[in-house]
Image (cartoon, rainbow, N blue to C red; front, top):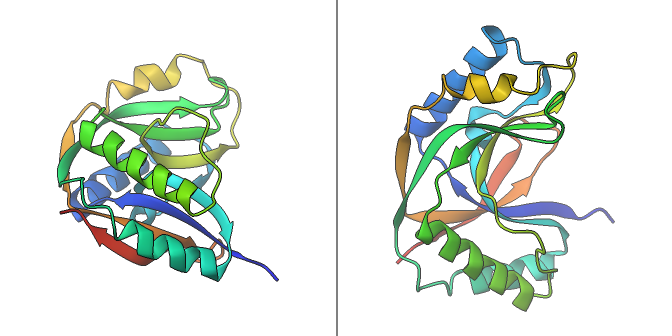
Length: 187
């Protein structure tokens, strides 16, 4: 039996989605960045924890425990600039950065703790908040400094008040791919 895949994230508001969608269009058309997959504006988010495939009983336990988060209050996030993961000549992932925010790091830490309590594996890498704009480079090799130089055109800072976070189910063959299973309000 195939299990559904899930992750926990902060959703972006319509204003940020729209701005980042405009950035994607500009990057695709004017700068001719060649990615196989561009994130749908409705799917743009900040991942707190990728969960992978989970059984229904684990999801139900996780949903209950996530509702117990009551020490994190609403906070602001600010996005800014572009970055990459992978080889600078053929960047695997193109993302926009999220300025370090104590509220975001505290929320991620609480989510991580609850996931471990539910029997999920602890993340061993440091948390690097970002918003994935595109994945899977398919173009020719580029100058390694190109994205860094290009980032100077995308320095418009925007913020958003985070009042909740969500549990998403992934539907790979749909667009948008992510369905909200649960939303948890911050106190």
